[in-house]
Length: 339
Image: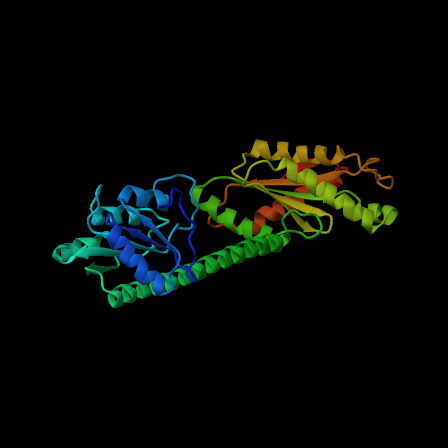
């Protein structure tokens, strides 16, 4: 007898569990099986001993079942075979392990109950060599095919998971501006359309900030395009940090221009956030010696707010924010102006 749960021998060398309280019955089955080349055989004399070998009910046991086939006596000292089979099949790890019921001829009346409990096949006592080997080969073949199918399903599941992750990453990359890492113009346009329709349905406000780095061309001329790119990245990070709500969106609109989309933001909050954006960029302290506005990089912001109506186009909100931006520039830049 084995006192610990054996590892499955694999279907190239299948491990077969014989469960019978009769030593003679076990010996007869073992002799037939070993003569046919099945050498990986373990035995149990009761349901409890079989459950222990199978790791039934033990937390932390390996996912792989301990055996590849169970030959189960219909009558055991501590439990009938049908109930034992039902408990084995209730364990998710063991649900695919075939169980062959070994029963006396007079016990064949219970076969419908046995099949309902999960028994795959049966052998009547006294055991015949041809019948035993035929049933065992059929069960092992079934297990092989079942395992192959399961491995294929697992491979396909993993492949689908990797594909989904790759697709998610592709969508993420497609939606981001390659230089600054914030959303790109394409994604902003899509999200603007979606939020506009949502605001129309729910009758909630929607705000837009149009933002422009002051005299960025002069910055590039003085410090070079590589440093200009670093400046754009730093400004993008500063703006992104001020868009704190999950639905708020900061995007690069083009060149040195950025845009922010702010769903459900009241009018008073829009201008306050616009001023925060200006302060955040000024607070970076990026030298801009060529700027007539300040010795550091600054930002001009135009803010617009609307309660979307069905007879109004979303482009009007953008135009309002753009006009406010030009007013901010006309008033000296480095400031936020509301439409």
